[in-house]
Image 1 (cartoon, rainbow, N blue to C red):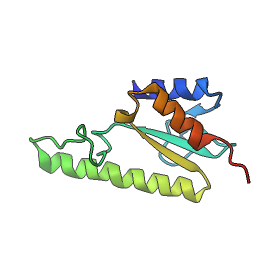
Image 2 (cartoon, one colour):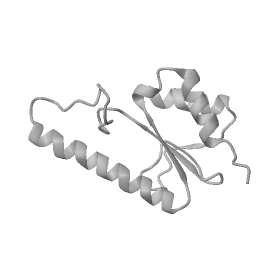
Image 3 (cartoon, one colour):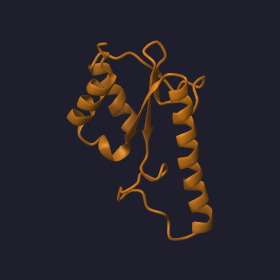
Length: 117
């Protein structure tokens, strides 16, 4: 499960977080309110990862699937914008990016490290 790998990487890096924070827009998979970051772990199919081979549209019932998948994309965008408006750093991690544990740790360490001013 992709969320488990991301959670393990966050824990290994020493980041503290809450899971599925319902009080934040979009219910991020991981969030730290004090540090003001939120992470969504998206499935490539369900969230239509552009350019990914896993983000296919089913050949049957396309009249059902296209609006459903595009609605997911629009909703994701609105939630990300709302979190950013609230001052959160928002990361979207795609299911296809999680295969390599080292690279996901590198991304998390780089993006979530405290910024020196």
